[in-house]
Length: 486
Image (tube, rainbow, N blue to C red; front, side, top):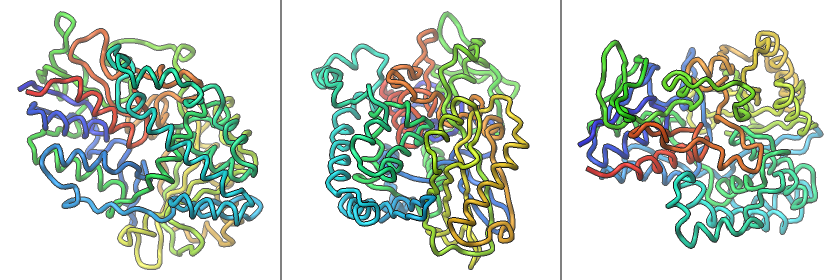
């Protein structure tokens, strides 16, 4: 039985702890915050509850698998419902689209509301499905940094099919070719934001994300998204994993090129294996004394500016997930990544979990999670930027929903890029570590193991394969597969 320390109780850290407990290792998770989940957290203010991080679940079997590894049934603890619609889209000129999770129904919607030929949508989703099944084993569920990954016919065949991978076009270029209408292009361009990237520069390979939402389905857990983190925490504890909250890891201890433990809470905690679930840039700087200059650092992903509004009214026109598009998507991303600024006409994401989870808001009221993409922190005047953006958001929502907003806000909390960095140690508040704004991004993510220190591994959204719930869970599986069972 090896002693394992996991630094960070984010979704990747929780999954790593569970997988190694299933391999009969002695696991301790050390977390600087007071609760598990990392970015998948929650806040309560007044009578309102809000998820603070991921709000959409895909590939729920990756969560269910963690229970199965320990001989339990996820359905005994989690009720995960498949959604009929993944999102409602609102356009500046008044058009509105409901993104049904059935490809047939969604393609009918785009044809009837936008004039987008049905066959275009079905063809696109069919290609996205084929791309996922052709590439997932190699690019999502395997390490790209070990030679043995490529020593099989399937992996070699995948790499020899660049036409299928489509890495040499941007996502927008692919979507402009696939769809006739600007509105349909914008819907599918948006999937680049699922890992904090720019659709006008990120490779068309990212169209794979649309498959997860429209072919395999979008899901929502009863109790809200934080319920997932909470139940994984409880699962881990039932099977012997120890958690130490409100505890910071000060340093790694090593001997002869191997980790021997950590210093935390003014004591040395010995370990044979250390798994870091914190941002890789932060880890290198704090624990390996590797100072990465800003100009040498890979381009960071976007961050987020989020307003949590407890509303004393309800909106009949909105659903669980809602997007209010900007009129100039290209300019919005140019400002985000080239100027480290937020457009005066930002795309707004509105998530109202009380549409599905009545207990998240009092009767007759709603909990509005209002988010815009924001640049990673680069020394901007956030006070001015936040207030200006808030005014633009309110004006835009009032125009689109034909209702007053300000007077209905009972309570308000905010989450800024600096808050995200402080709470989760994410570099400059970037949500997904590095962006995917070039064709080599998949190969440029940090490996899941250290090449310098034996026994040191990495999981979470800032390393391979990337950010978002499914990829963080995949990173934990990759790490677990590298560590033998006892």
